[in-house]
Length: 385
Image 1 (tube, rainbow, N blue to C red):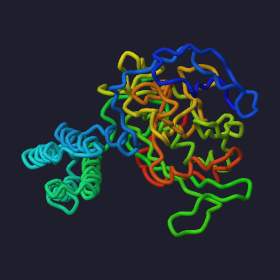
Image 2 (tube, one colour):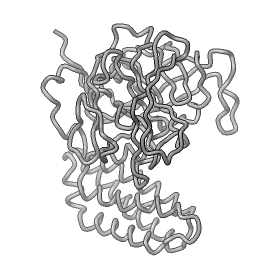
Image 3 (tube, rainbow, N blue to C red):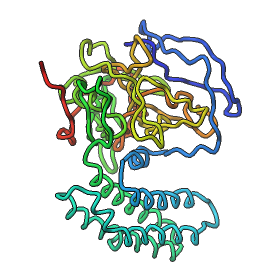
């Protein structure tokens, strides 16, 4: 297993503003080491970052400003729904009215942002957004009825439609890659990877609803080339080549890591790739200064984040093949709920289905197979010379 990784673990109180640590511990009995940073700085408690992979992925889509305004207005309702007692339904109603007005008044602008061959599909989705079951008008009625459960269901449906429209507006990368990285594999959008995880000791995973216990369980992850095209592209190529089939997993309290010992000479040592919030393109070989307010589009501080480990040689590069699922736990996070290692790794996706089994994976369990089930057409491979 490659060394030099920094999966920070802390049991210190969240009121501490600066932690100064400098120690290393052996990981999983291997010769490699898990190194904790010398100084971890906690960020403001006002920090608002997405807490689910679905929300983080939706925010990462580079879409029309009108769609983003609709999205922001609706996502505010998610926070308002968390108020435990007297929910501000009047504010929620105003948010939906605003979103409905933008969707109606700016329909032409929204649809014209899509490639011509996708506009018919976009028009159908737009009608669903405004007038469909689970659309904006349905959400508005649920709010007027002060039915919090219906509001939650309709809001999820509406935001899903928003994401589908935004994806139609973003058929490829919205920026040019630096010339020195054009020889790397790259993902020019989204892809879906399906992992089949098998128990190694004969035990089983928890059953699905009304099902039987499972020796094998499925995790689906959406990987995002909009924010991390090189990292996601390298990973997608490895999956396409079957590199992870049969690879064992190693577990810590904070991560489920792939064992890279069987993956020598596979993959590209891509530069650390992090897209900061509010920026047009990723930064390369540069960590973010979270204490100065720099936050990534794809945060680490989400349970089930899919992340590349650091290279054994330099933290400015990611491992060519070793990845991990991050087991975010707010009890071990800093102020604002940020992981102490936020902004330090190339996060390139999130587990969206089956992430509940991550807690059941044990060291020695195996990735029986990893398959690219969607998005192969968005994978650009370097020309062979």
